[in-house]
Amino acid sequence: MTTTTRLLSGDVSVGDRLPELVYPVTATTVVLGALAARDWRPMHHDKDFAVNRNGTRDIFLNTPNQAAWFERFVTDWTGPYGRLQRMTFRMLGSIFPGDTMVFRGEVTDAGVDETGCGWVVVDISVSVDDDPKTTCKARVALPVTDDDNPWERTGDRWRP
Amino acid sequence: MSAIGVADIERLIGVGQYEEEGEFPVEQGYVWTTCASVENGNPLFWDEQVAEEVTGGPIAPPTMVSVWFRPHHWAPGRTAQALPLQVHFDLKEGLGLPEAVMSDNTIVFHEPVRPGDRLRTRQILRSVSDEKTTRLGTGRFWVIDVEYHNQRGDLVAVESYTGFGYRRAGAAEAAGAAGPTGGRS
Image (tube, rainbow over all chains, first blue to last red; front, side):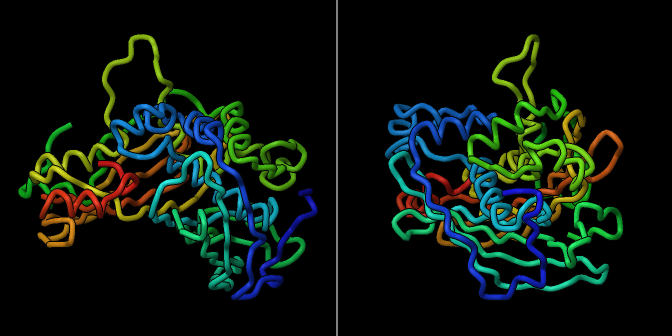
């Protein structure tokens, strides 16, 4: 990715799919994610606790870190000019070491708001063996033209 | 920390509670730790020139907003703190609903968060439903907003949580439905 990556709202159509992201999860992935989110709860780093107290088969990825994964998935596609407006998460199941996460996303809506800000809605899921574990509906602002920058919007001109 | 009973609900709807300032300022090191944990190569977080050009200087990943309120594992002289979603626990206690799940949550992003910012947060109860019965049991749905502001008073983000506090209809049925990630309880 470089600074010249600038997905424009006009480049995107409903039905477009984001490039798939496949990532093998290890215990390090889970622990690093928990520490990055300052989530010290033992089910995210202590397998004995996770198995014997939580009844899960292993430690599992925490929610705030999954949000960070979804953000990365979206901005890998948009480049740095993509500015998140809102994200809605639904947790369906856990992700464990040994799982291979697959992130998929599809554009389900697009438009330009009354202030001239371009936006798209992307329905995303992270699945393991085609079983969705978390879904996320993300709305992200995109530049309308090459000299537009959603990050310059503030106050009444930013309606997320 | 005080239980919220049925008689308190109307008085507390829309009222900011548990306002607090983060224990430490937003820091670049933790931005890199988070980006590394998900291999996020967005140059906004790694290249000062790009950050200057696109966002007028460095920013933190928007999804990190709640991270700035999770304290270090230990700090000298620290006393007990409110839980991150204390209003949720106050409702559970005051309404006598021992179990709870979070059905979904939404984050809306406003002004960017920047290294050095000192963020403040407060919790606002938005709604509590009448009693309803679901496959989990009988209880109430509620919506709690968590607002985040920076030191200039700008709104930077709002998280909305929809929770369902309940009494179990049957232990086995509820355990199967809630699952290990059914939300904090």
